[in-house]
Length: 261
Image 1 (cartoon, rainbow, N blue to C red):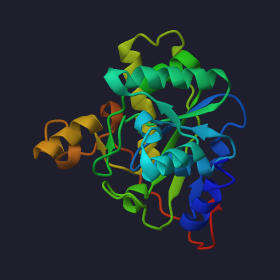
Image 2: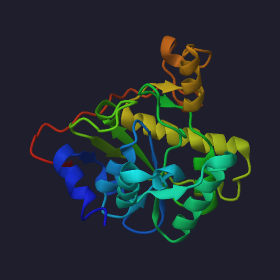
Image 3: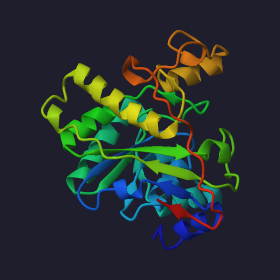
């Protein structure tokens, strides 16, 4: 349904470009771990791959009243979003169980390791739920970088600006060497940092070794900078490693529609 109605419209208007499409597994389960810059990330990534990829979304997106609520619910269903009740502090467990169920069926599941949208376009510390999901399911993790979605849809903007959206898909990461170690918090952190490093290498984003939710709280309180914020210090990467020498990807030179490579 989403490819018949929503997909062609988004493709026509925003002309998304993608690199690394060949890194998408042709069969079997896989976890797509992406940076998170805007709400529309969940719309464009599934659009550019041949297999069905779904993300989870807040239950509230599906239960709104009136015309606006029905339109929102219809659009979320159209792009394949799975509703999850995130109330009562159960968000992480709900995401884990939803992901394990889908991966157990040999399908693709998308997740944002940062846990929430970046407040300023930088890449933030990953939550270890992504590592638990990978180790418990045994599925490979495909790192992904969304490019330009925060420019098209900055915080507070409902309708995205018309511009090209980019997606860079990295090579799958295999964590089978850690099988049975999903309860070791040091292993979980190591796996998570490895995933975030791969995302950083693809996206060219500056890394901040604090959680995005923590940074949002700081911004709201009027104190965005604090210990652990790397903006004023040497560039670092997840796990305390030196930052890779990479740049933010740019669109291909051709201007004729979507580009896949």
